[in-house]
Amino acid sequence: MNSPSNPLLGTWRITWMETWEQDDVDLMGPGHFRFDRDGTGELRFIAVVGFLDGRFGKRDGKPSIEFSWEGHDENDPASGRGWAVLEGENKIKGHLFMHQGDESAFTAKRSKAAAKRKNA
Image 1 (cartoon, rainbow, N blue to C red):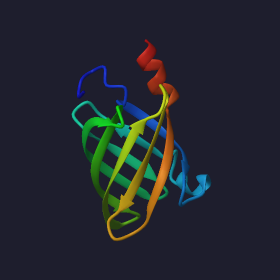
Image 2: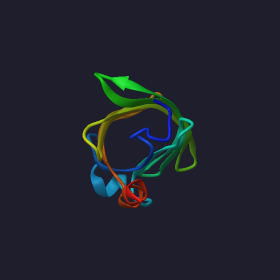
Image 3: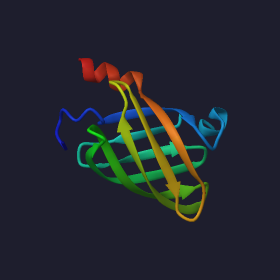
Image 4: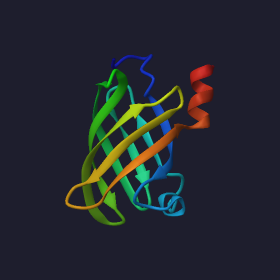
């Protein structure tokens, strides 16, 4: 499933997080996940920036990724894990965990720039 046609590749704009309000999620710019072909990527929300190490697969027959992440929350080291599953062509849902901290369900939609590149 780790191929150029992987439907999870690209940037996904966070549209909802169970634990935080959207204005908070977008505090330092649009909250998002980015999944790259090699399973790496990035997450950004509130003041958290993390770099992903993921594995593509399937969950309930749908394309998915499970990942660990490491980065920072403001100036403090932060890490955790999470997963996301494709729900339709342009939506993912998942769960994010911060090591010894908060956790949150989330939904995200494919960013418009990523959708344009996909259709080009």
